[in-house]
Amino acid sequence: MRFCFENNVLDGDLRELTCGGAAVPLQAQVFDLLLYLVAQRARVVSKDDLIRQIWSDRIVSDSALNSRINAARKALGDDGATQRLIKTIPRKGFRFVGEVREEMAASPVPAEAGPAPARAAADRPGIAVLAFEIMSGDPAQEYFGDGISEDILTALSKQRWFMVIARNSSFTYKGRAVHIRQIAEELGVRYIVEGSVRKAGNRVRITAQLNDATTGSHLWAERYDRELIDVFAVQDEITNAIAAAIEPQIHAAENFRSHRKPPSSLDAWDLVMRALSHYWRVTRQDHLAAQALLERAIAIDPAYGQALSVLAASHMFGVHLGWADLATTAPVAEAAALAAVRCDHEDAWAHAALGSVCFSTRRLADALSEFEQALALNPNFSLAQGYYALALSYAGRPKDSFEAAQKAIRLSPRDPSLAIYHGIAGYARFTERRYDEAIALAREAIRHRGDLTGAYRVLAVSAGMTGDSALAEMALQELRRTQPGISLRWIATQLPWANDADREHYLEGFRRAGLG
Image (cartoon, rainbow, N blue to C red):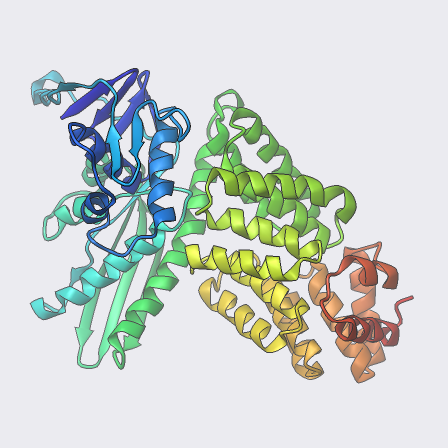
């Protein structure tokens, strides 16, 4: 069924919203909510109705429900003030009040008439998670495979970068031999996650792979062998590992896709994908390039929350590494981060960006709160986990910092920021006066990346405190190469310690290392 109103067409069969013939990107859950409101427009739909229909009676906060309503309104050019199409009925619920014309979906084109043109993909890519196949032939194990698939789907739904197809749609292919290209066309997605579960005795082998359905290529694949001592612990561990691995692979694929487009056709999504490819390279020049691309994306769409949040995070990352001046950069970054939160207060990137601003501007309690909110929204967000670890260390909680940094490393063992996470863990050990461990972690960070300042800082101060003058001299030499303006004054004024004793300990390490 197709519902036509104003200049919009909501197609329940194709799961597509178009405005003036152009596809409007919607998260799967927001699409389901909008479709339900339009179909039930003759009555007021209560919050309980929505929770039962859209969330399958799971516990949902008012803020989560309201954010989906706001997203549906935004997609239609409506808002909470005008309520032109979606009206809030106080203490009752919501009602779609637009004038709607219903149409039957077009009949399929006969085979002899030639292939139907492919449906235009939404600006943001869609992803579907298929039910994992049970290879052991034991129907009793089906619950485990379905649980893995559902948990991955839920974890990916926390990523705001792409649309995730609901379980009720993706699980309809369970037990059927259907080519992934056909599945992708029918669901309107670019990417398919599929996998299998094989259980033998007390061990289980789980394989997972991410496919680009438009090319038929495998973007990523991994195998996990575990003992089934605790079924749910294994399920959680593997879910987290798969979800954390998939997001950067999609970013990389989308960046490659955007580079194949002529510059004149780049839209805000493509610009952000290109910016992220620079962001993750973690160099000064790349971050400047990322910022330029993000500013272009924001010029196209001033309310593009993801572009705003990455821009703010990039600016503050540069401040911490000594690439940018705090006084001039912080106001720009804070304005962007606050705008990102206003655009989507449930976007983990927006809260991580705001947390990074609070961190560098010495509001550590606020920074920790923002990072915790980011991780509550997306527990698999390794970047937020790393930021959280850094803030904990400067807040005087080195043990918690070390544990948080280790979690960031476990979440994304192939992360481009892995060297940074090792450096943060090393600084936590330095704060605890465990200098030998700090040196080992700093060396591990340098093994991953030899051009970042954080690891050389930790190596210099730890070597200074242990009296290893040769190591301290080498670390300082490399530090001056990566951060030419490093000085005791910069350290004392630019880094945000909560405790004077921790600052003095760090400065003493540098003095003993020979920094003037």
